[in-house]
Image (cartoon, rainbow, N blue to C red):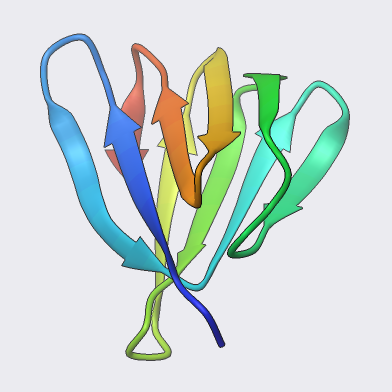
Length: 86
């Protein structure tokens, strides 16, 4: 499966930065899945679970607050004041 760069950013720090094969975020449109080479997208986030599928076939799960998801140029970025591992 192809990979893309993912960054999880709070005002204080970068919580995660690395390659992922899949991202599933809670957005106002409902659960939103992102794969490599996804079309450009900006979407508001709903507080909820964020799931990252890593290249080594493991998952990293985070809890996010409100914020937004930005996808472009084979890169996804999550911006939220609250991002914590669960």
